[in-house]
Amino acid sequence: MPRLRNDAILLDMKAATKEAALRELAGLAATVCGRFTEETLYTVLLEREAVGSTGVGNGVAIPHGKIEGLDDIVLCFGRSRTGIDFNAIDKRPAHLFVLLLSPAGKAQEYLRTLAAVSTILKQPDNRQKLLDSTSRDQIVALFGA
Image (cartoon, rainbow, N blue to C red; front, side):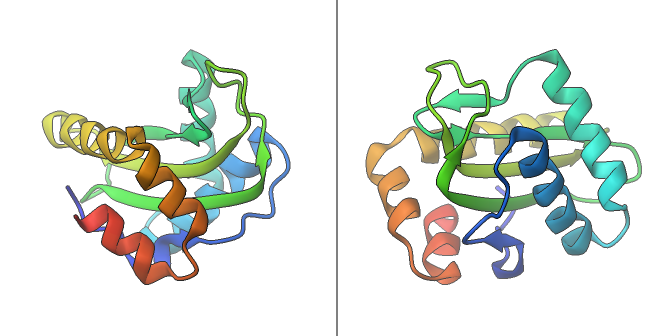
């Protein structure tokens, strides 16, 4: 799985709506990858959400998409203290967000990364650690395990 970078983490998201959360994460991803604008990445995420919500339940959302011209998979993490209605399967607000952007031609690596992220976030202990973390290093360590 690609490494989650320290500078790709938002400990306190400001967003209050699904669209604002996607925009906030797109802005972070644009800064991290440096090749695409926030607007471009936001559009990719909105298009994916139109297919079906990436709110997977248990307070987790994994917005993701594929982008032509991207060199490597980009991972970003965001945490919302208040929670955001993300149209999740269980109707609960999302507090933990992992954004995954993949080059269009790396389907296998994309699926492996999505599976690895899902495995980490399925564990109640891991979700609690992510909610309780006080530093980006703690979050990086959890995803690096």
